[in-house]
Length: 303
Image 1 (cartoon, rainbow, N blue to C red):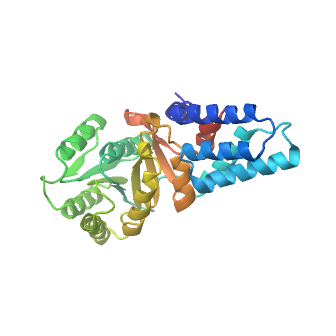
Image 2 (tube, rainbow, N blue to C red; image 1 turned 30 degrees about the vertical axis):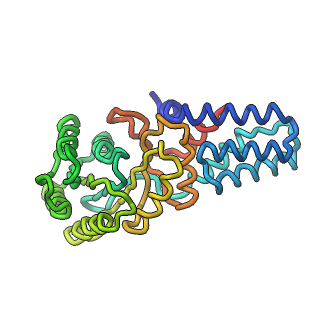
């Protein structure tokens, strides 16, 4: 299955809801009056595209209607263009530290799929011919270490782990040392899920990052926040708070295939200016796909 087909399948619920609403608005009201524009605004907000992007799309549609009338007015094409433009800024490639190990910290609240995502990133690196290690720094959640070890076995990626209840920072320290000794390209660090409102847990995350930076200056080179698409705009608050404590370099959005709120990807990028680097579009190891703004916008607004 090609990348566009995967995006299309993953965004199916969001797309069908949006497309249905837009078609209904356009066919019901051949003249794009204030009422029709208001209905369009409601449909875009309903798909969690956020106020900023919604205003941008509605503004562009209004302007096109005023200059060319309804002949050849393509609301889908306008929305697609605005979304692509909004998502194209920022560095979407997975970073690579010059000459040596790249440390990637995977952070987020409980239940977003961080452990699975860390493993899938290791698989992604391997698919590009690079070597990777996994660090099991979630030493609190029952079965978290077993889960990442299972993924490691399945994908033939070694896992550095400590005992349950061990200090996550000391596991991170050992993992960086092991990754340096083995001269691997990437170390993906699975951190414990933590509520962005819990001050002590956020401080613990800072400590993990501090310890890694001491061991390897510049680490972590990437701090990727994993967001569950089904939470919609709730994810925006998570992103805001995590970004304050552990400055983020990008986002990974999971469970896109199970929601009609896929527009939140656009809203968060618009508000925080953080690039979306990967999308989780299913359960398999290769269902984590590098983000592509053009194909995402197309899958969202294809008629």
